[in-house]
Image 1 (cartoon, rainbow, N blue to C red):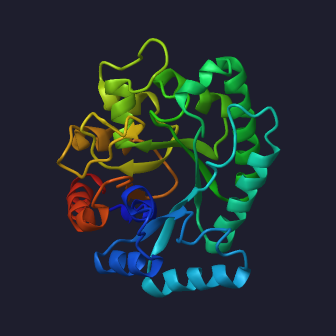
Image 2 (cartoon, rainbow, N blue to C red):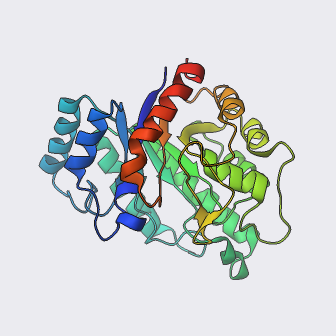
Image 3 (cartoon, one colour):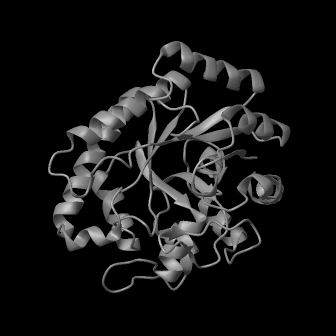
Length: 299
C-alpha cells in the first residue's frame, strides 16, 4: 500500500490566499483523516525557510510532525520569484534553491519540487535552444547538490510553464541525465499536456494514447506522483484545473497500472487540490477516493 499525503498549498494560495488555513489546523485535520503525511508548500503562513530562519523553529515543526505520526513527502519550494529561462546568470536561482534545500535537510523532507518558472510565452523573448540550455545547466547543478544532501529533485511539468510538450519533457529529463532527477507526474497536468495540448506554443503535440501513453514514454524517469482528476479545462486560462476525483476524465486504473512500473525509491502518492475553490471541504472525499485506488492499485 502507498503512503498518502496532500499538498498544503491547496489551503494557502488561490481561493485561500486571503484567508489561509493555519498550519496547525491543516496537520491536525490530516491526522484526523488518517493521512500518512503532507507535501509542504513552503511559502505564505505555512512553514518555510523565510518564516522559520532559526534551526530551533524548524526543529519544532519536525517534532510536531513526529508527535502526530505524519511524514513529509516533499517540498514545493518557493522559486517563483526567481528567473530561470530568461536569466543569463543563474546565481540568484541557485542561492534560493540552496536555501530551500537546507530547509529540506532541517525538516527531514526527502524531495524538492522545481518547475520552469516562466510561462510558455517566454519563447517569444528567448529562443528555444538558449532556454533549454539554461534550464538544463541550472537543474544539473541543483540535482548534483541535492544528491549530495540525499534529497531528490522532481520536475513538475505543466501547461502554465515553458517546455510543456511531451517531447520537451523527455528532452529535458534526458539532458539532465541524473539518477537524482526525475519527473513529477501530476495526473491532471499529464492529461492537459498529452490529451489537450494546452498552452503549447506553435503546433500542438498530443498523444494518441493520451495521459497513459505519456506515462509510458516517461517510464523509469518518474520519481514523484501527484493524483487528481482533470476535466480538460484550465484554471483561469493558466494551469490545469485540479478537479476532485470523479469530476473529470482521467482513467486512474489504466494510469496507475502504468505509473506503478516506476521504481521511484519511495511509496508516496500525493493528492493535489491546487486552486480548487473549496479544497478544505472536499479533502475528506478525495482521501476516500484515493484510499479506494490504493486498495486496488497501491499494493
